[in-house]
Image 1 (tube, one colour):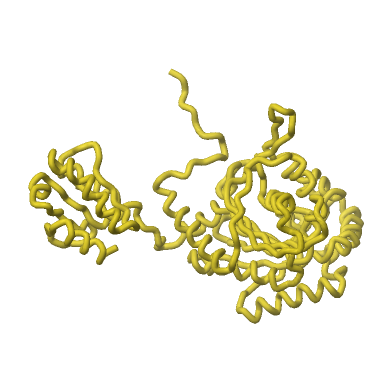
Image 2 (tube, rainbow, N blue to C red):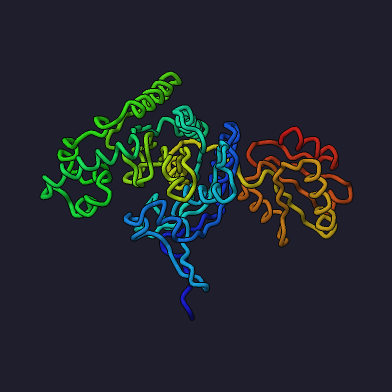
Length: 423
């Protein structure tokens, strides 16, 4: 016998008992985004490889090591999207959304990176991205942070996350700082680990974000980017922090927060938690005004963030009481030839009258006892019971499955009124 085929390593199934939590979180997120006036955009999973090389940078771990890239039958190099910002900008440029316009957009779906799988890090992972175009001021930066903070409040995890904030200044200011940083680290090559040495002349700011504890003192004594910022960058960041303070949003200033992609400028932020081990960043983003030109568009303003759903849900699972409803509200038990014949019609009548009710009808036969076991296992609040006697009388038995109540038999119309009063 052939071996069973299993899922690809790092690409996991979301099973039926897990999907209600996903659906709950996705519903809350959609509601919050709608309350701020953001519109959904749906993007292809596969893009031209050049898009990511141009946006993320060829000398990055994502492009060099992590992308799923292949040649199609026409010889074009295509890539499964490793992130969503580049695709969202590509679509906005292609369809003329950035011409003298402002847009607030969001997208959601699977991303792909060939990394070493571990808890909270998968090769196929789900990500929400939120992007805002055409707005230069710190007010839109503040709005995105407020929006993400509202996510945590609605999802019940606000007390489990911390906002870390920094400014990277403009690209020109950062280039000057970059030279000083290269000079500093070059004087201490013997203290750099292999990864940092590799980054020294390609992306030296990423050295500041190292997790190597042995380099902590070296990083602490490195030049500060804030010393190289111009008045405009300083004013932008000051306005943002004052707005957050006024609105009661607590944050930690992290001058070593640089983000992994070169296209960021001015504001960068991360929401982090101490409850998920090494994978502690659940949401990250910032301003990336220069990326639009990199992709062939006219100079414009852009800011956004992305959050990993697996990490959000892992954090929600630490809550003592998850607000998740069972998949089924009512389970219909039916035994007997006449009962089986009439019950489907009655079930459709109930669904017509209560379109939001989740009613599952027993299929496949079975005794009353076995069907009651299925009803209990479904998580339903009530069982509707139809035997041949009930079918003849036009009645439905109603039995509470989670409370100690006597069963009652009611005519179909009264049973409908009973269900309307409960759901």
